[in-house]
Length: 260
Image 1 (cartoon, rainbow, N blue to C red):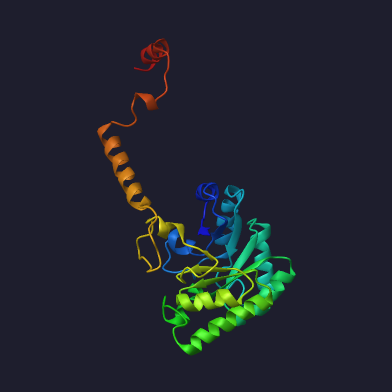
Image 2 (image 1 turned 180 degrees about the horizontal axis):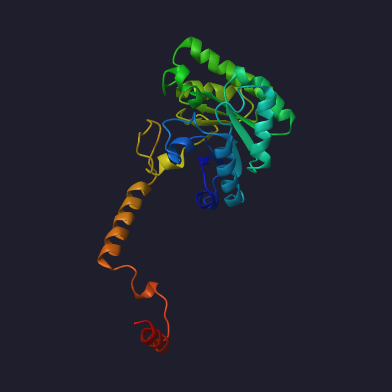
């Protein structure tokens, strides 16, 4: 699984054979420049999900439910999930939380909308956690995460994302669940992995989480290309003759006679 937020990148990820594309509310930071995911709106998510859905022909598209689109009530959760399916053309939705959102998960799945749960470090709860910190390192919190995993499965989630929890804890959860686990900062014992594509390509430089590996230095290459473009435009090297269109000399002679 990789994130995508627009048509062009969705096409590239789809062509690479990635199974699942996540339209994450991480777009708040990577695309919109916010400090966290909290300001992201339903309109933001619907807009970007629709773009991705048009580009993904084979990949399964999951869209994030943004902050306060499902916490307020079960009715709001079902209604907003439906908008991501109907207007964004997602195949499924993802929401954050464990036992506390099981009522919403149950209602959404009963409305025939597949739900991917998200437990461990849930970025929409960073204020409650005191920042982006690894979760489940003590017995009490580890047991809570295990119970959350069992609860979301029981509520009807078809998949669960495990974020920033110890590798052995993620492996245990993967072993005891019947549904697939997708890890991000949770080790390789999960059934699958997800990364923000800006992170794995070195395009987002505000910070680099420990679990991120750069699979390409695309951000650096982009900067080099932008600098080359700037220099060639200033030196008149671009556009060259091969980048221009022709017109008959006779036409130009007539135009020069009339207008000069």
